[in-house]
Length: 104
Image (cartoon, rainbow, N blue to C red; front, side, top):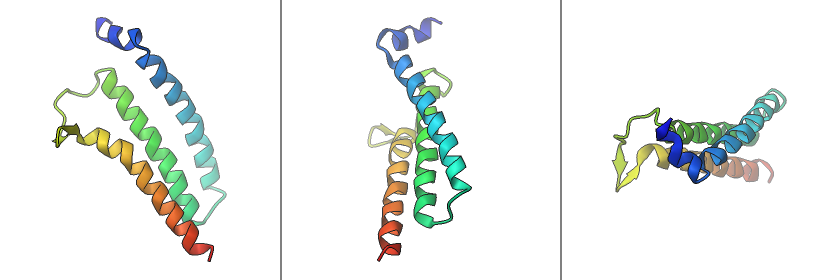
C-alpha cells in the first residue's frame, strides 16, 4: 500500500479511475455501435476508441506497478507509452481518410 501513496497524493489514481470509467462507457457504446454500422470509416473510429481504452488500461497497470520497470526505450521514451498514445490517433486518421474518400 505504501507504493500507492505517491499516486494518491498527487491525484494520479483518481484521474486514472475516472478515465477508466469513462473509457469503459465509451467502449461499451462503441461495441454496440459496431453491430449497427458496416462502413470502414466507422470501423476505424470504433477501433480508435477501443485502442484508446487499451492505452489507458496500460498506463493504469503500469502506474500501479503491475508491469516491470524495465521498458523498451526508444530515444529515452517508453515504447509502450508511445504506441498506446499514438495508435488511436493513427486509427482516427485512417477513419478521416476513408470518410473523405467515400463521401466524394
